[in-house]
Length: 168
Image (cartoon, rainbow, N blue to C red):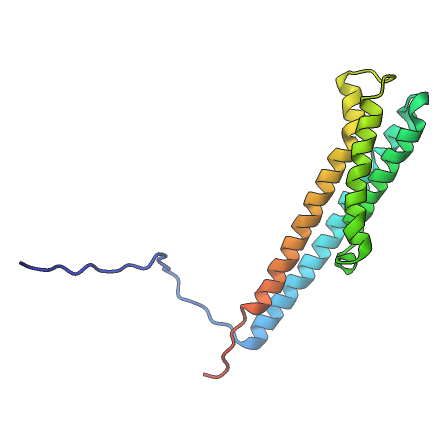
């Protein structure tokens, strides 16, 4: 009985030859990627923070007279969202980072309950969106903040992938 041997194939077939970088080239590449990441993150933080503050004008100019206090809470929630997005990683891990997100989430829920479910409020879609805006922007802010942290972890992870062996 003839036996046959199976040939093992690699999972990935790489047609291009590997390019090896020395330690200095690796450090330059990582620092270049890190600076590009920091610049893009700073621009994105400012853009998203400004975007989250824009609905405040709706609450200033179009809030019915019986809902001014809820509008102030909505503006506070939107400012907290903007600060959460704008603040960089230097605030992470501190009490402000830990409790501001939780407090902001509660504020945005209070705004929706107080604004939409109030007996004085109309139950149309426009009113629902108006009072749900702080919660919507809270969710967007938390998603943006999480994605910034993931990108920062990715760049930091590159430093761990550097070659550990020196020499020829």
